[in-house]
Image 1 (cartoon, rainbow, N blue to C red):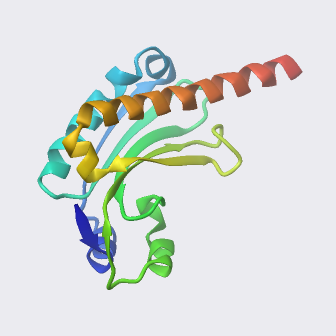
Image 2: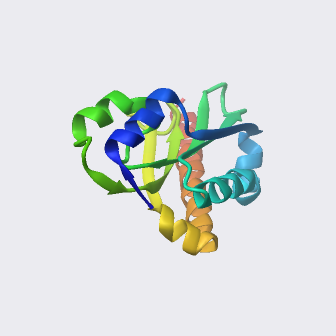
Length: 159
């Protein structure tokens, strides 16, 4: 799946991408990342198959009152939709680029930049083999949860 940069930026500006959101607890995320992400992944697969740009968001509560969410976004570059102005400065509007599926963990607790973003796959690879990309997404999510728990345990040990 490819998208012209100008069309992509217009979709972000007009918010014509499709989005879904939900809420879960940190404990549920830790215990069952596959279950927590199942609806987001199914939504992404269904919407991407029709050629739409997507954003899924799962807000996570119960980790020391720290705001956090995990998102999936289909994008031309590894920056969240919220950074449309920066994307506009970095890409030529006349270019056509492959649309990729990015995994975003957004929280002040995750790292110094307060965000972790990685590519899950191209949208086409996700549509061709959703099971392996879904497994990659949940494995990545497990890693982020583990980082949070390790940092939390180290902080408690210091106190």
